Image (cartoon, rainbow, N blue to C red; front, side, top):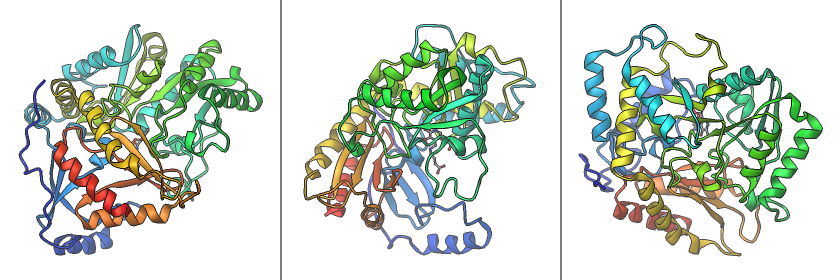
Amino acid sequence: MSEPTYHLPQQRKLVTALPGPASLELAERRNKVVARGASSSSPVYITAGDGGVLVDADGNSLIDLGAGIAVTSVGASAPKVVHNVQEAVTRFTHTAFGASPYESYVEVCEQLAELAPGDFDKKSVLLNSGAEAVENAVKIARHATGRSAVAVAENAFHGRTNLTMGLTSKAMPYKAGFGPFAPEIHHFPSSYPFQEPVEITGEQAAQRAIGYLETRVTAERLACLLVEPIQGEGGFIVPAPGYLAVLQSWCHEHGIVFIVDEIQSGMCRSGKWFACQYEDVVPDIVTTAKALGGGLPISAVTGRAEIMDTAQPGGLGGTYAGNPVSCAAALGALETMRDLDLCARALAIEKQIRARLEPLIGSSSCVGDVRGRGAMMAVEFVRPGTRTPDASKTAQVVEDLLHHGVFALSCGINGNCIRFLPSLVIPPELLDEALALVVAAIG
Ligand code: PLZ
């Protein structure tokens, strides 16, 4: 196993208050021309990123616990990604795979067929974004089954396009004012162990979901059932053990395509290539994006060959889908994941985070829960002594961290979780420094 190399010093170093004068000046320019809806959670403008750090326009070096929302797992300028992109871009930037094909697209699909769970023939289609992958997974499931209804879990996040907004639960900011949404979407009650009023098993949670769908939709009308193996934006919710397996076998029994969205959890993030492998479930279709491209936009729908091939030639694609520069980046990212054994690194990060944060859980503490898998960990903040979500405490900790040079993201259906999803190549000492500041900020 090789060790990561870095071109930026892996350090937290503040030379101004945050945001500094250069960031403030950029904010002023932005406010005149960038739409208000396209807001940023941090006011700090970035000029470079590598390993576990982001450098801002004022020369501050921040510890990055967000990895561009789980994208830069290999780092924001991983040597193999940079090399492959530079090499690809000097040959050709684009042809449109649907017009003139090229090898790198085929190679990404070969690797996905090899990596995705399931001992059967797999095929893929490449796209640009996570939302586009989810849309295409649903398209394919509908085509393969001739059915139209889609079942999706409560608290899910699947994207911001019209179909995927409809699949997403949280109204603010994702859906409010943007409807109407696509028909035939059914949100079933999912598994959220920490917020379950009475403790139930994964099997019971799955039976509750199945009962809901049988009553309101019926299995025969469902084209697919779509789940995140760990709900991401919803709050890094790990479902109770057994939940996914029961849903999968119900789908198989009724000819419903079982789609697992691994856009955030996949590609070593959870400590395995795919988070669903913890539960031994095998998706009929799996969606990937984010870390797959090492920072460049690319996504994929990978599934059983016979399901994927039901769509007619020309039925899937898009002008930029599977762009050659993004494919080259993906090949560099996949190679890096293998060479640096990023699954093992993700598990080491989990250990480090648990060791620091689990001791904060307590009956009189604002830390209600510490959960997740691998380098996909979150803290859920509550009013001490209750399970009532505390979004303002969450926002305050994120803000405090930023002022100390640590960039962290919140999440959660109630906005009361902080997620820790650093690059998998963050040096352990740097992560430890950040975690000490997290503990201090929680106070
Ligand atoms: N499915 C499971 O996590 C994207 C959203 C950030 P796109 N999550 C980050 C934001 O503010 O929009 C996501 C995901 C899962 C699908 C998506 C959508 O992926 O690449 O953002 O379209």
